Length: 362
Ligand code: ZN
Ligand code: ZN
Image 1: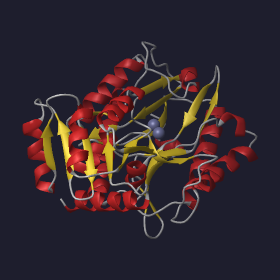
Image 2: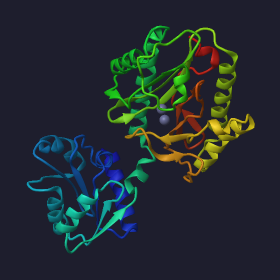
Image 3: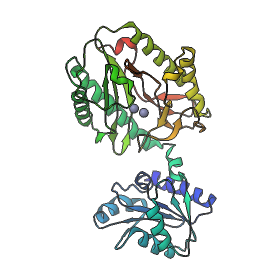
Image 4: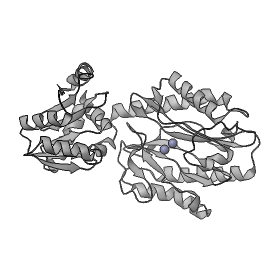
């Protein structure tokens, strides 16, 4: 309970700094974060003295149960969301009102403008997303459970990863096993890519059958109580050509180099560079096309970005992925993805799944 009150307090401090009397929160993850409401199609108005969830009759009862304990109010709209917000903004005498610029459609903005004639409407950029970068204790706990469900799910799936099964078979089994471990769903469509198909960083599972002597890349995660996990492992089936082993060790080395520099105060791009330098030394820099990682929480991809140009400073409570990878068309690809938590001192790797080369030969 205290978490939501703290989040609202922090947001109100940001609104004062932005010289806004209220904020219209329309991003559904942000609504959930600030109110505890788990439905959709609803918008939250955070004013100085109150926070009101505007919803419709499908959700009125559920919304009350979920948000009243945190001292929020619920308004069941009769007409449009914008009209209901207009009435509330008038009631609280808000003159400067923000709306989420990264989320509002042109259409929604027009409706807001029509409903709030005497109000200065202003887009804000990622105010709530900024707060969400730092996970509080209850969020860390839930992410840990999402990581465990993913890992245990894969562990139970391993015996069925063998020559002859299709990529789709593996993805289906893995999703089932994660749910058996407590996941509400897969965090995103699972990637299973055998052999040369792993050169596509975001390959969709196909009916292609896994063959002996090849690698299988699996990128998967669990969603549990609205929080996500995101991991990648590559497995080798049987006897492996030596070039796979060599490249695997380099990716692992790049990941280790990145993990070594993670601590509070370090720039995210410095973490990215630590991994990139390892590839550069091996003349593989061009093969590592994507950023090193991304925040994970209510969304699978959220702030902070960890890439060549990201300028955030690491702070305790940040959770993000470290996922160096190299890709060769017609040959395949290798990526190793773990999730980390920045602590007051140092870093904790949240994922435990084996990744030494001899441990991933199955
Ligand atoms: Zn992933
Ligand atoms: Zn990822």
